[in-house]
Every structure is written in C-alpha cells, then in structure tokens.
View (cartoon, rainbow over the protein chains, first blue to last red):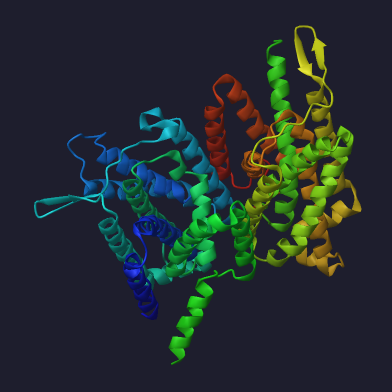
Length: 322
Length: 286
C-alpha cells in the first residue's frame, strides 16, 4: 500500500501541474500522460510478465488505427461514439496480442533474445504494411480524427480545450495505473513473478504457463491499444510511425530508464524522458539524442533496476523502517 | 537466360554481404550470447571510414585496410567499457548495445551530417559477356566476401584460437578450468566480429549510399539470418543468409521491394518459430 501512497502523491502533483504551467505545456503533458500509459503497458508485460517485447508500439498503433477508423465513421457512418472506439481499440489490440501470443508462446515457444528479435521484426513488418495500405491512408496516415466526445445523461461534450482534455486523460491514466497496481498485488501478481523467474516450476504446480503468458500479453496490449486510441484523439491524426519500430524502442528506453519492475517508475520514466527531451533538445540541440543514448547505456549497466526505481525503492524502504 | 544472370549475380552479392555482416554478429552471439544491436552501426562506421579516406585523397585499398582497424579499435573500447560488465545479463546486452547504437548513430550525424554520402567506385569498368554486362567491382566484392567468409571459417575451425573459441562456446566452465583465458577469448572474438563489420561496411560503401541510418537495414536481416540458419554451427549463417538474402532479392525484382521485405520477414518468423534451433540445428539460445 505504500507504493500506492507514493503513486497517489505523484498523481496529485500531476493534477495541480496545469496551475503552474501554461496552455502549451498542459497540452504537451497530456501527450506525455498517454506515453506514460504505453510505458505502464510495457512495464507490465516486460518487468512483471518477463516478456521482452521489442515492438510494443504495434499495439499502440493498432489501437490508434481502430479508433481513427471508428470515430471517423469509416465502418458505420452513424456509429462514431468515442466510447465504442476506445472499446474496439482495446479489444482489437488484445485480440491481435492473443493470436500473436498464441503463435509465439504455444508449444515449445520462444523467449528471451529470440522473442526480442522477432517482435522487432513484426513491428517492422506492420510499419511497412501500414505505409502501403492505401485504404488506411498509407504513408500519410489518416487525418482529421475527431477529439474524444463524452456522452452522458443525454448531454454530449467534445474535448477540444486543453484543460478538460488533460483532466479526462489524467483520470483514465490514474484508473489504469491503480487498477494494474492492484492487480499485481493480488495472487495474480505473484503468479507473474513466478512465471518470470521459474516458469518450469510453475507448470509443475499445475498452472498453465501459456494461459498466464497470454493473459498478461493481451492485457498489456489492451492498455497499449487504449493509449494509442487516446493519442490519436489528441493529435487528430494517425500514421504508420505510431505502429512501428521507432516508438517501440523509445518506449523501451523510457521503461528501462525509469525501471521496468515498477509501474510508477516506468510511467514517470516516460514523462520525465519526454519532458527532458523538450527542454534539453532546445539547449543541447542534436547532442540530446547522444546524451539520451549514453544515459540509457549507463542506466542499463549500472542501475539495471532503473534510474527512477532505485531512489523510489530507497524511499519506500525508509518508510518501512519507521 | 541472359536476363537471369544479372539477377542471380545481384542476389548472390547481396547474400554474401549479408553473410559477412551476420558472421560478425554470429561470433558474438554464438559465443557469448551477446546480442549486439550496435553491429549495424559498426558496419556504418566502416563505410564512413571509407568516406573519410576518400575525402583525404587516400587510395581505395588504404580505406579497406583502415576501416577494420578503426572499427576493431571501437570494438575493443566497447568491449572494455560496456559489454564486459554485462556478460552475465544477456538480455541487458540488447538494451545497452541499443543505447550504444543510438549514440553512435547520432555521433555520425554530428560529425558527418545527416545527409547521405557516396564513395566512387574504385574499378569503373564492367564485364561484357555476350548479351549482358556486369560491373567489375561487384564481382571483386563477391570474391572478397567469399575469401573473408572462408578466412573466418578457417580461423574458427583450423587454428588453435578457433579450437579454444569453440571449446568456450561448448563448455565455458570446463574450458576455463583447462586454463583457457575465457575473458581474453571473449574480448578478441568480439573485436574480430566488429572488425568484420567494419570491413564489410568499407567494401560495400561504393555500391550503396552511406548515411547514418544504414545500419538497421543490415542489422535485422543479419539477425534473422542467424536465427533462421541456426545459432550453433558457423555454416548456419550461410544457410540463413541464403534464405533471407536470396528470397528478399529475388522477390524485390519480381514483385516489389516492400512485398519482398514483408514476405521475407514473415518467412523468417515462421521458420524461427517452427524450428527454433534453426535450419541446420545446433543449440538453442540460453
């Protein structure tokens, strides 16, 4: 529960941030929250589930495309509900992950380095595919994706303004964060630890390793799909860059720098890295990417648990002593 | 028939280059279980050494000799500063070398600019044989690749160094108990792998456009070649390279480069999934 206290403080801090920063930064921060959601999904599957997915953005991208196609009315012109779009995006990503996961993990399955290379290759294939799928906009992607439209009690409200959008996104991210935090504190979380460390022993205790892997893979994909769907409503367009290799590896860097075994650290890793990128790339120019690469290397070698997770853990341990 | 010959020659030269790149990866992966994501960037640095050599007015051959030396030096530096500390965490090597690859790429952008460079062909002529003609340099390139591949095989199967290296691959603990300095062997294998990447980059530089993003285009097919062929025996890389490079090249000509890439990756993924030990067998990854 200590973990959730720190988490709560972080979300309260995020909630009051718009009071101190201008419109522009509020908008930026909204984007970073969505990236944070992607980081949470990757942390769940990688740090907790032990599945190193080098192509997490494929679920993000699939969610984004489904949301765009739905809310633009490309399937049913009358059915453009945002809720339905979000639901379809999550379901679509989860289904894809289920099928892909079954293909990858069933039977002898593949894991470790092989899995990393294969997921990387799949992300590259999907990116190429979307670049050439002209019905879905091809290289240019789909433009004019409408913003989120909230409908409740007969009222409807489109999220055009930055402040309400920020709070709605923050709310969604908070719900997912605390939901997943709760989930990994249940016996299911214990099973995930077991699957990560000793899958063979787990199966000898009568658990289905395959089903567990599939469940965590699909759940993580659904969260990534949700993030992608939210992202396209913010930006107003979806393009193949959302599905591919670059975003996948960026997400990997956020999560590794933050700390993959701690949802909060992974989430903050995304937000801090993106914020640092906006600030520092102005100061350092092209040197920023060089710095990021070096920081990433150093954090992997010296602090494998993550740059942010290490101090947060210290903080928690100190509280425990009292 | 005469239209077919250049296509086959193109495919063969692509396969040979791919095998050359993959061979370096394979030595590092097969031996230490280290996935070197920066291998593509080392290949790129080899090509940039060539660009530099050309700008300085050095002869082509000087560039070819300089590239592996410079890149091997990089390799030594990388092994000492980075890889040595994470041998026992194979999955983390993917991440650390990925960071390295980003840093190296950006370093090249900062020194040479993001635009692409070209290296002039050292041998301009083309071989005329009846109905078709083929650039001589590509033939030289193929010959050089074959020699290099044979040389690497010779090193690993016919020399004391190779014997020790294979002992370390098969039984690291026993090998070290027998007095083989595994640390030193790891280091020099890594350096040899990087030198091969640098040499490959230098040799290929005249026939491709040299830009900071060129590494990835060889890294992923290189890895797929290893996994498809099998990470155990050295010959696996030949089989894998032939499948990946051959299918990619032929489909590019017959259908389109995009369709070829997608098909090749899917074929590779299917083979790796259904036959994880690779076409030629061997041991599975740790």
